Amino acid sequence: MSIDWNHFTPLASLAGGALIGIAAAMFVLLNGRIAGISGVLGGLLRPSKGDIGWRAAFVLGLVGAPSVYLLFTSLPHPQIDAGYGTLVLAGLLVGLGTRYGSGCTSGHGVCGLSRLSPRSLVATGAFMGAGFATVFVVRHLLGI
Image 1 (tube, rainbow, N blue to C red):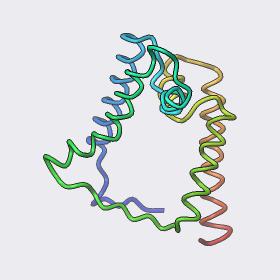
Image 2: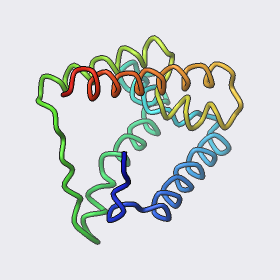
Image 3: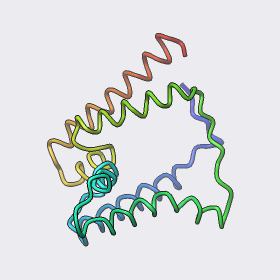
């Protein structure tokens, strides 16, 4: 394994992580809610009265942020080495895991761990372990 030093951005990554942490902390302190994306989106699919506005604003902010970013610079061009079938299957598996785990990576990994939630520690360990195992099998055993 080697590091692509041309694209290694520890300061930008640290700043991004700090912004996510600050936003998650502000969200829970000001609203008393966890900034887990699956829970926010799930609440829009099963709306409760008086609960739609902030959820819609949250999702619109997530979707609209790249448009604001485009005002200042161009979007990066990621290279995805997978076909549509693989991406659809991966999305369905992530969604299924989110339902079984009672939350997603942002809810458990960012918000739950910062609250010292034992359930989030187990969930984060499980999805990280599953991710490591999947990469190992796909890259090293199957050679894809």
